[in-house]
Amino acid sequence: MGMPMALLHMRPKGHAVQTPLLGFLAGPHADVIAEAWPAPHSGFLTLPTARRHAAAILLGHRADLRAADVVRAVERGRDGELARLMVSGEAPGGLVKALGRLGEVLWEAGDYARYLALFAEPDAGRVLRHMKVIAADRLALIGALPEALRQAAIIAHLPGRAVAVDELADAFRLSLRIHGAGEAAAIAQRWNRASNTLALFDMAAEALQPVRFGHVLPVPRLPERFVPVADRKALVSVALEFRNCLRDFTGDLAAGRMAVFTVREGSEMVAVALRQDPAGWRLAEAKGRQNEDVSDDALRCIVSVLGLAGVRTGESTWVLARRLHEHACDDCGPAHTGARETWRDRLALGSLWD
Image (tube, rainbow, N blue to C red; front, side):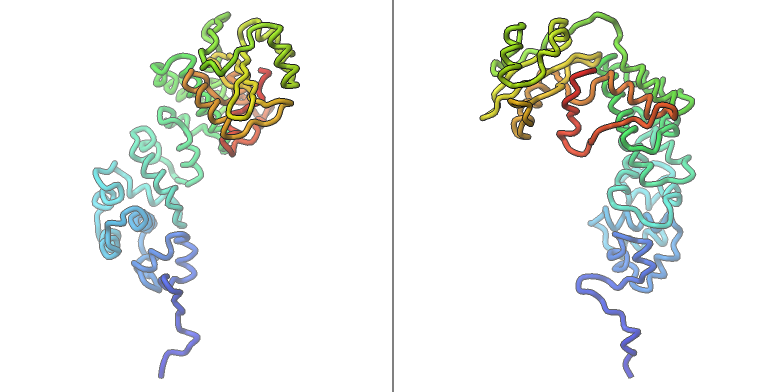
């Protein structure tokens, strides 16, 4: 007699049979693991946690290895051999052992790639070796930091909000514009001495303060199609033509802390406003007539030209410093931040008032 129909596994075309338990534990890796360890997958399910994660990494990252080779390495190979296979070369110590602290459910491929990249860094790898639990979302926060900031105390004091960590990273990059790229190590070491999250974020806010007062940078030199608004008469004319509020900024323009240009990009006429803060000149606004939004194509061209002239985009140092404190202060926060999902969002346009 044949096997009763109720006991037959129906194998979808192109997919290996997988049990519900494997589907739960392996997630996006379930198919390739079911091919390497056929149902009921006992060879895989009885592996130590670290070895199961190693299997997912090898099956996902090493297309040059046969499934049988992966099975053999995961089931019988030493930690050092397995680690070298995962990174395709010399591997840092403790790489496989730390996989045992990733939890029972397998990670997404991108999270494994971040784990391997961070482990390869001297400072970040040292931190990972000593973490009792390694979570993918925590690694995402660590990965958002510049490499110089991936140090033990800084990582220990990171809050759970991704936007706060992003702005800490922004503050570090801006601090290098203020104090010079040669100060990167010194700034990172100073922040690494912070005793708690509030101290860390207040240190970052302090690094955004001006080195000396009264220093006004020359207006950036831009191509001829960027026509400067150089006097009161021109400002009134532009404000009337564009129907905007630029006349409210006469004082800042006169003091040299702001500069306004009109520029034609394709069929669009755009009023471009730059402002100066301790990190230099930044793009504060770009609007068409009657404050209409500028097309993405025109805006990208403007941003590209400004970038070549040393003009940055993003939030002002004054606003960012205030938000850094609010991110970490229970009495003041949480900081309110606008949308940061799109390229245009991250330009932080509209921040004319500091």
